[in-house]
Length: 161
Image (cartoon, rainbow, N blue to C red; front, side, top):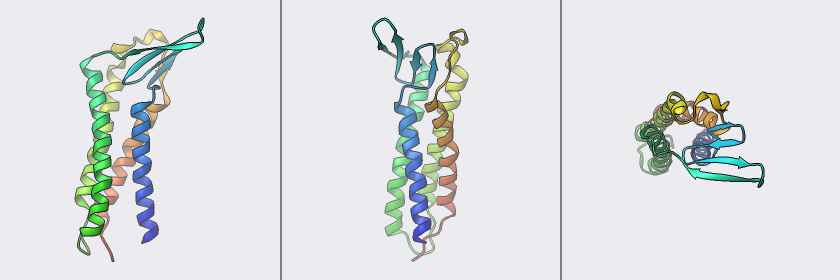
């Protein structure tokens, strides 16, 4: 039982790390000395060997992606907190429904944000720029199924003594 509990916590913390990295790091779009994420656009200046970073666009769709990614982090942190609270207060045989629901909400938020970014990124950077999706975009899509799986595990899990 202790090994199962440890595995669930490791899965949850790994989802949180993926969500934090995918939200913060500037690698959602890469190409031609250019990096872009949810917060800033950076261009490599070869003559000065440095990056020039500007604030990202104020498009409504980009703001919704930012909000979805932040909400996914909030829901996942809240879910972990609720899990520890329920671990000590839940009666024997009870299920972790509230924890699972918040973790599934985190997964749905990250899926929504990544899907919006997938559809609308050409409005921000035309496809002629020869850009491609970066590793943090992929991490966001990896965090989505892991968060859903984690939420389902929480819902199925029963408290034992």
